[in-house]
Image (cartoon, rainbow, N blue to C red; front, side, top):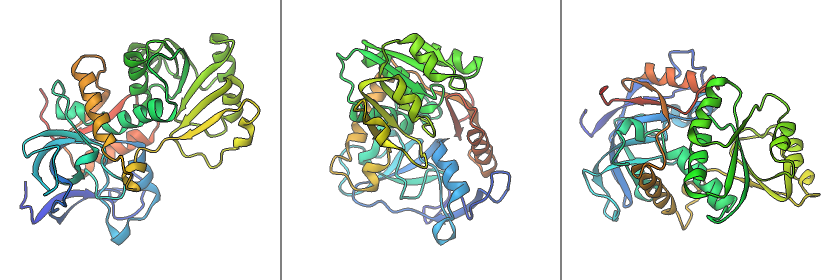
Length: 342
């Protein structure tokens, strides 16, 4: 590690395609100083999410430089004066905040209230795959759709083999025994993945999705968690039962919610950065979610979702990770790590 007066980082200096060697570059930045609620974390592993790709390719960085990266796992090196949840030496994992410098650096500041303990049964490499997708899936299922432990019904997970879908399927199987999961997958390997995670049934989202779902659930379904809602409202309206609900995590250009009125359907948005971006009073709920997920992992009820691992954390490996995620065919998560191979 360099002196904390200056640290190594991998940054975006312009909105460029991932094929450009300038899209992510090695640099140095001033060493971060913890604020009252901050942890200073030595980053050991990161994972790349669609939000990284979207920002890198579509938004010019302010002041000419942006350190991307949200998911991370590492060790606390110092804490701010108001910190109560962690101490130096603790191993942690987190998804960070969208309005602060990211995890693609050797040291990162992160508010303790959005940080969880690293699952003790996972390496940093494995742990880095879980936070963003874990929080997104948890908030979608339990805060937006509000599916209760005793609930019965059917959930359609659109994009079941992706990062969020891979956690959502497992959370349902671990905590919602009365809920049937239909996951979408379009390739034999992604179908095998979602079935292995616990999906009861699998349908192909490249086919006639409504017909496939209604063949499995002729009376319709109660809930949809969708990672790709563009142009899909007629399908969702058709397969949902009266008073059904949709939670979307993507960015469609428009949503014609009037089409949902006849069945009195509910549309929810899930954006896991909303709490930190807007200073929500219950910001620490994300700390509790991550700790609960760590408990489930350590109890063997949820498994890690890292499927592609690149070493070490460099501009080159991060560009490759972005390329893979941007290709849209990743099963599970892509992790970039400084941990050695076992």
